[in-house]
Length: 222
Image (cartoon, rainbow, N blue to C red):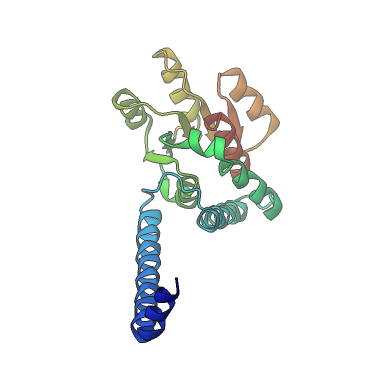
């Protein structure tokens, strides 16, 4: 052992240089890894990451996206309030390990003739590692449903002059034997609209962004 200590002492400058180079390499590795992680996250190609601080950052990004979407929708529905605690609780459910694994690969079809209205909501759902495809008509929705499987369909109610387009899409799906959960996300949250939606076979009718997200997390995260 003494010979090793003597060797290290005699070559201290080289040993220090090796340590410095190792530290630089490690730093560069973390830096490159962080950049790649950020790029993949922005492109929504990361499905799940379970490394403490990284998962925390992903969850915080989802909270921020959900809060932004909720505030945007609240501005269109003044009777609603933005509850940050509720937002955090809702998002946290999606990042529970057993739920996060179930969300991987799940897809949502969102039907709305004004897709820009849902831009922030779509962004929030993608932060939960969900795939979201948007179409603007009943015809496009039915075509998409014949081409690929979706785990949930979200629809507005009125499209153009047709104020009951959402119900018509639901009826067309059920007539074709499609039993995918159907969620109505519209401006009204009147009790009678909830009752009619349930009677027609919809699983939810709401104008509450967090209620919508909560149902999706609970249903797809089983």
